Length: 96
Image 1 (tube, rainbow, N blue to C red):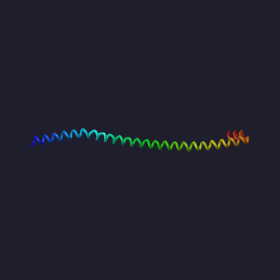
Image 2 (cartoon, rainbow, N blue to C red):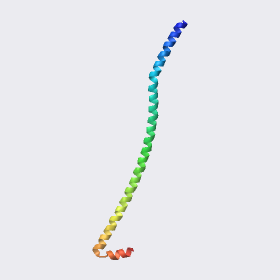
Image 3 (cartoon, helix red, strand yellow):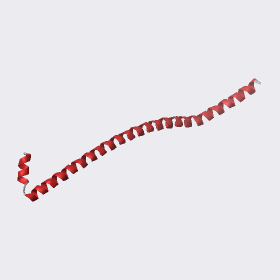
Image 4 (cartoon, rainbow, N blue to C red):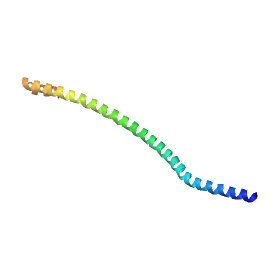
Protein backbone atom coordinates (compact mmCIF):
# COMPACT_ATOMS: atom_id res chain seq x y z
CA UNK A 1 0.00 0.00 0.00
CA UNK A 2 2.79 2.40 0.88
CA UNK A 3 4.53 1.69 -2.42
CA UNK A 4 1.33 2.39 -4.36
CA UNK A 5 0.87 5.67 -2.43
CA UNK A 6 4.46 6.74 -3.22
CA UNK A 7 4.03 5.89 -6.91
CA UNK A 8 0.72 7.75 -7.20
CA UNK A 9 2.00 10.71 -5.19
CA UNK A 10 5.18 10.84 -7.32
CA UNK A 11 3.11 10.75 -10.51
CA UNK A 12 0.77 13.49 -9.28
CA UNK A 13 3.74 15.58 -8.18
CA UNK A 14 5.42 15.24 -11.60
CA UNK A 15 2.17 16.16 -13.38
CA UNK A 16 1.72 19.19 -11.11
CA UNK A 17 5.30 20.30 -11.81
CA UNK A 18 4.75 19.97 -15.56
CA UNK A 19 1.45 21.86 -15.44
CA UNK A 20 2.95 24.61 -13.30
CA UNK A 21 5.84 24.99 -15.77
CA UNK A 22 3.32 25.44 -18.58
CA UNK A 23 0.94 27.75 -16.74
CA UNK A 24 3.37 29.93 -14.74
CA UNK A 25 4.80 31.84 -17.74
CA UNK A 26 1.30 32.59 -18.98
CA UNK A 27 0.23 33.85 -15.57
CA UNK A 28 3.38 35.93 -15.33
CA UNK A 29 2.66 37.46 -18.74
CA UNK A 30 -0.89 38.29 -17.68
CA UNK A 31 0.37 40.07 -14.56
CA UNK A 32 3.00 41.98 -16.55
CA UNK A 33 0.44 42.92 -19.20
CA UNK A 34 -1.95 44.22 -16.55
CA UNK A 35 0.70 46.38 -14.92
CA UNK A 36 1.87 47.74 -18.29
CA UNK A 37 -1.70 48.43 -19.30
CA UNK A 38 -2.20 50.40 -16.08
CA UNK A 39 0.95 52.44 -16.77
CA UNK A 40 -0.26 53.09 -20.31
CA UNK A 41 -3.63 54.29 -19.02
CA UNK A 42 -1.93 56.72 -16.63
CA UNK A 43 0.30 58.06 -19.40
CA UNK A 44 -2.72 58.53 -21.66
CA UNK A 45 -4.43 60.55 -18.92
CA UNK A 46 -1.34 62.77 -18.66
CA UNK A 47 -1.31 63.25 -22.42
CA UNK A 48 -5.02 64.10 -22.43
CA UNK A 49 -4.55 66.80 -19.78
CA UNK A 50 -1.53 68.15 -21.67
CA UNK A 51 -3.61 68.24 -24.87
CA UNK A 52 -6.39 70.14 -23.10
CA UNK A 53 -3.89 72.66 -21.71
CA UNK A 54 -2.38 73.24 -25.14
CA UNK A 55 -5.85 73.57 -26.67
CA UNK A 56 -6.79 76.27 -24.12
CA UNK A 57 -3.57 78.17 -24.82
CA UNK A 58 -4.13 78.01 -28.57
CA UNK A 59 -7.70 79.27 -28.22
CA UNK A 60 -6.50 82.16 -26.04
CA UNK A 61 -3.80 83.05 -28.56
CA UNK A 62 -6.33 82.92 -31.41
CA UNK A 63 -8.63 85.31 -29.55
CA UNK A 64 -5.74 87.65 -28.89
CA UNK A 65 -4.69 87.52 -32.56
CA UNK A 66 -8.27 88.23 -33.63
CA UNK A 67 -8.40 91.28 -31.36
CA UNK A 68 -5.06 92.51 -32.68
CA UNK A 69 -6.20 92.01 -36.26
CA UNK A 70 -9.34 94.04 -35.56
CA UNK A 71 -7.27 96.81 -34.01
CA UNK A 72 -4.89 96.77 -36.96
CA UNK A 73 -7.68 96.91 -39.52
CA UNK A 74 -9.35 99.81 -37.70
CA UNK A 75 -5.99 101.60 -37.53
CA UNK A 76 -5.39 101.07 -41.22
CA UNK A 77 -8.89 102.42 -41.97
CA UNK A 78 -8.13 105.55 -39.93
CA UNK A 79 -4.81 105.93 -41.74
CA UNK A 80 -6.48 105.52 -45.14
CA UNK A 81 -9.17 108.09 -44.33
CA UNK A 82 -6.60 110.58 -43.04
CA UNK A 83 -4.51 110.03 -46.13
CA UNK A 84 -7.48 110.72 -48.38
CA UNK A 85 -8.40 113.85 -46.50
CA UNK A 86 -4.82 115.11 -46.33
CA UNK A 87 -4.87 115.18 -42.53
CA UNK A 88 -2.11 112.59 -42.18
CA UNK A 89 0.52 114.99 -40.93
CA UNK A 90 -1.89 116.71 -38.53
CA UNK A 91 -2.99 113.37 -37.01
CA UNK A 92 0.60 112.14 -36.71
CA UNK A 93 1.57 115.30 -34.86
CA UNK A 94 -1.44 115.01 -32.56
CA UNK A 95 -0.45 111.46 -31.55
CA UNK A 96 3.06 112.60 -30.65
